[in-house]
Length: 397
Image: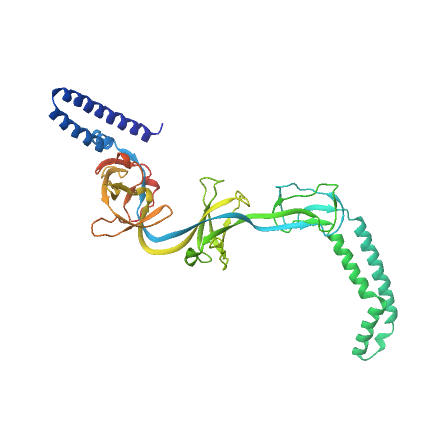
């Protein structure tokens, strides 16, 4: 068990013992008279309000807590929306020639490289087509040479050019060359290749399948980056622009936050929902995010310069007023010290943080100070505490 848990159990045990003793005194006082009982009841109230923190302070045992640094920086007001993940690129591949599938060396979900073979259609009839077209080109070339046999003796270049053009048409050479290119194109299309690196999805074929022109083969999706299309309310669109920072969490991947930026903004607002599509692009090198996942999107909206803010968890309500506990380190141990009660006035909330603003009847917190973000239930002013995560905090000088 962690040391902070032992300390907490010790504090609770000592506090319970004190409360038990006070209860016994009350029970004895009730037998002596009502006046004494009232006095003891007041003592119980004070003991409950002080709780284990006073006990720990008196015993010299620090209450374990977590802290956070006060920040003074640009305060980002995040625009929140929901969206779904989509691949950065997606290509649905269809057969462009017909025939039986001789090879299908991939499987659904498999990773492929650019130009990798996905399927091979029987090329035999298309090779024959190339040979026939090539033979027709040879025949046409012979006829062309026959028609232009003595044209080199013609002095006028324009006359020679015109005779050559006419000879190509009469010999059929131009048409034969076009037919050869078409046959070569069809032969090349017997191999269906990945247009870019990615993953195979919606694989529709197996070895031995017979394809017709237009039949679906597979879809290749590039998951190295992910686009999340978020529906943003029209009232918040003016605060967003292309290039703004964004962060996305996915319920399917708890505890992980993916950082990205706005890449496009649809200028049209949907009448039914009063929202517009804003696309956020995320890096996804491990392909953990897959298309179709539901995501919660936060986009940097208003940027408020030179503001002071703390985590929301630092704010406590006492006597119907907002309070923070500010850590004051001891001279002996910088991680141990006192929790100082300080009234504050809060401003704008955004994400995990809340702004602290100046007010005439409350105090401010300053960069370089540490506020406590847990353990409030057992804290009082001047409680003896130890900030367990002090070494992890980035404290401004």
